[in-house]
Structures are given as structure tokens and as C-alpha cells.
Amino acid sequence: MHMLTPRALAAPSALVAASVFIAAPGAAVPSAAAPPIGGARLGEKGLILNPASGVPKPPKVSADSYVIADADTGQILAAKDPHGQYRPASTMKILTAITLIPRLDEDKKVKPTWTAANTEGSRVGIVPKMQYKISDLFHGMLMVSGNDAAVSLAQQPEGGLPATLKLMNEKAKSLQGFDTVAKTPNGLDKKGQHSSAYDLALFARHGLRDARFRDYIGTVSYKFPAPRTKKQRKKHKPGGYMIYNHDRLLTQYKGGIGVKNGYTTKAMGTFVGAAKRGGHTILISLMHSNPAFWDDAKEMLTWGFTARSKVRPVGTLVGPAPAASASPKASKPATTSSPATKPAASASGGGPLGGAGAIAASVAVLVLFGGAGYAMARRRRRWFT
View 1 (cartoon, one colour):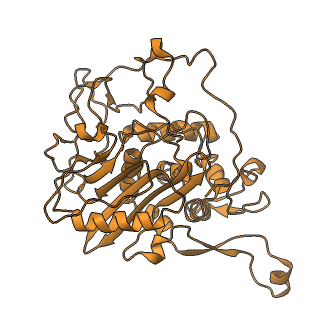
View 2 (cartoon, helix red, strand yellow):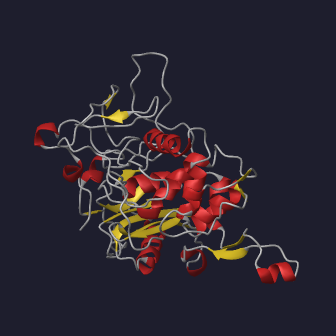
View 3 (tube, one colour):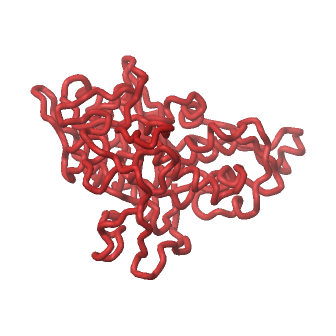
């Protein structure tokens, strides 16, 4: 197993007590002794469930970590090691998208750099001599997992890729995704990069509230611009080729509305998916799974529709952290004000922070990892989705 456990990610034993958080301004940072975000039970490793009469157990799946949630209420219906830290593979592109969609003009045309066009792994096929609309790049990143499109998008804000990674980590913390550290915009394996099934569900739920995000992830086919081929020039036709969404549930599962799949040899299969039936949306996330997870995903969604409103939730997908208060005395647990985002309390003690208690307001301590330094050069893998 390639799970990035808290112990594996920590410094030597003398420094284990210290933690590093790259917190956004005003983001609540949990103290070392606080219960897990979303509810005390979410710290458990095995199946987390409140059985209900007439409701079967969730399906047995190959994933080492997962969340099944009601996306409308935020209630987590069942989970397995939801805060376990794993490599996210291309599901990291969800965080890239929700960070950049509000910041970039989707109609603006940009010319990719050579570096972006030659990114390793899966590509949509951008070339430096072409100009692409920002919306083209988002389709390429979210539909066919274009690592090249992800890098090109991340290079657009002022400050380029380093600035975007900083924004991504700030976005994660502002949503209370404290299990996540982004080191790449595309999810290619890099030492120190990790997320959790809980955080991925948080990010996806946030993204589903944005019509542009829903459009990108829900598009089944799209004509991607490209230089004209000889045949196209001869017939006076514009360049371009069709791309098709990698999310099979869009066409194979009733009500499927997409999100994002991923794979690397170390992360194994990762997936975040959602479906809507009868006016209700179920959201799932899974990590470190057999790459052939599509049947598992379908069964998890189906169980979610069966179990919603029948099982007692085991935790909550919390709302964003509150904005910084002008008063230095203010340090309150995060709450949400909108009925659409207000999480329902559960018997597990899950208010908005699941009984998390006091939230640390101070900055964290810098930890030295055995004197070796934390950053390493990106290692190549065979293929990615």
C-alpha cells in the first residue's frame, strides 16, 4: 500500500508534535488535539456506519478510503478512513479548477508555453504555436485529464505556477481541507503532495455550486482546437478534433453528472463522482483503489440514494471557514449561514466541526524533515489519467 500515513508524512519522532499548515487568511486551523473535521467518528479507519433497519451495508469495494455523502445537506452517510492521506492523482485537478475558474476569463485567448505543452503523462494536445481560450483548457483538463492544459492554466495568474500552487493551498485551507497539500496543478506524483477522500468530497461539493464547473465536468464531447491538418486545409475546414469525457458514469449511470477520475502507479485509482436523481444529489470519493473502480462507484452511488434520509449520518462535509474577524478575540468554529450549505447535526456529535472544539488561531511551526529537505524533483511514471 502506498498510503501516506500521518506518521510517514511527519518529521522524526522528536518533531512529530509539530505540524505545518499553509493557512489562508482567516482560515480556522485545527489544534493537534481537536477531533477530525466533520465529526469525531471520521477519525476511524475501518467502515464508519450507523446501521439502519432495512438498509444494507455499503458495497464492499477495493478502495482503502472513501466517502459517500448527501451533497445537498452535507451529511456523510458512510465512510472508510475518510481523513487518511493518500496521493490524489488527477483528482487534484478539482482543486485546480475551483481555484482558477473564478480568477480566469474563460473567453481570453492564451498561447501555451513549451513547458506546458510538453508536460508528461496524459495530454489533451496543446501546442505552443496555437492560441486557446481559457474555456478550451478547462475542458481539456477536466474532460480528458490533460496535464498539459492544467499546467497552462496554472501559468496564467500573475506569478505563474508558484503563485497558483499557493492559491490552491490557500483555497484548500479556506474550505477546511486540512488533509491536502498541493505540489502540482495536475496531480502527477510529487513528494509531499496528498489529499483525502474527505477533502476531495469537500472540494467537489464546493465546485458543484458553480455552473461553469458543472458544465466542464458534465460535457460528454467537445471539439478541441488544433492546427489544421493537410486534409482539413484541402477541404477548407477548421482545425480541431473531438475529445470525450473520461468519466464513464456520465453515459453509464442514470443521473451521472461527473466530477473527476485519476490514476498513477503509486496513487492507484482515485475518483470523485456525483449523480442526481429525484432532486437529490449523492457525492462519492474514493482513493487508493483498483483502477477498475467504475462498478464500485456505481454501487456506492446506488447505495447512497437508498440510504439517504434512512441512516443516521456519521459526520458532515463542513462549510468554508469564516472570514477573518477584525477582533483579535474572535476564534470560533466554522459555521455556514445558507440553508443550502448548512450541515445537519448528527448523533456522532457532528455540528459544523463535528464537536471539534477550540480551533488554533496561531501559525504553525516549521518542521525540518530529518535535515534532508522536503521538496524532491518530480519522478516520472508510466501513464496517468
